[in-house]
Length: 288
Image 1 (cartoon, rainbow, N blue to C red):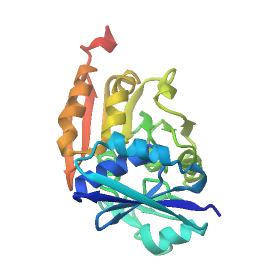
Image 2 (cartoon, rainbow, N blue to C red):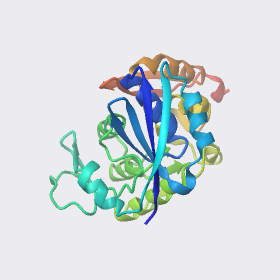
Image 3 (cartoon, rainbow, N blue to C red):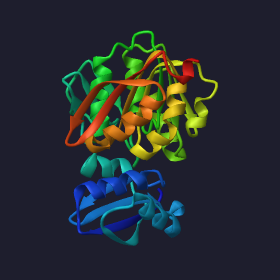
Image 4 (tube, rainbow, N blue to C red):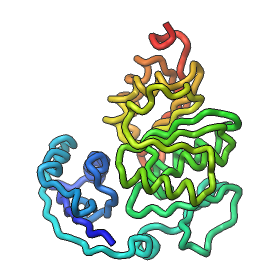
């Protein structure tokens, strides 16, 4: 069992949106689980990965309109599945069609799509608004016979559902090694044999066969930085589904996507979190 370092972040003045921005940045620095507090958040990272300098870099990158202080303690290794079951991860029903539960759950509704996720401190159990927004949109789309890429696949939940929805092939890409290994386990648990998982960043898109759908539930900064690679990995007319950012960020993300030849189709919002659907047009630089 692995020990975790808990970093308690305090924001002054506290603002929920500012705390969420910090969480999004910390996720890119290897933090795996977050617990809201009265004045900030507790963030958890495997003890061997903790780096004080990296924490300070993350705080600087977040560029919050608040003063940030933090302190640490170590959480001794324990049965993290048991902790998730007790405190965090309960079966999640989405849109009356999909239920997400862990292998240790026994009481959950029987729905059309049943996804087993053993998160082990990784992201993507369906409880966060961005994941549920993406799941809801996947349930609306026709994935039959389509090629799908899931950037930042996390626990693999979106890749698994795309396969269940009839995709011909799915490639999930994850930069964090622990999350990648967790996704491998979850894909096996769900017996979806057409999901290929790759460990790495957006450079892994190079050489892949163009996709009909590209999914990316990450954060605004990563999406904007890599949007050109996402679009280049899509077929003309392909669909780009993005989440991990606030409604206030839509204009920034949409502007970046437009420069790469994408047209906005749908913008869904839940508690200020957003899912943006765009379609790659035929008249921009990637088609010249």
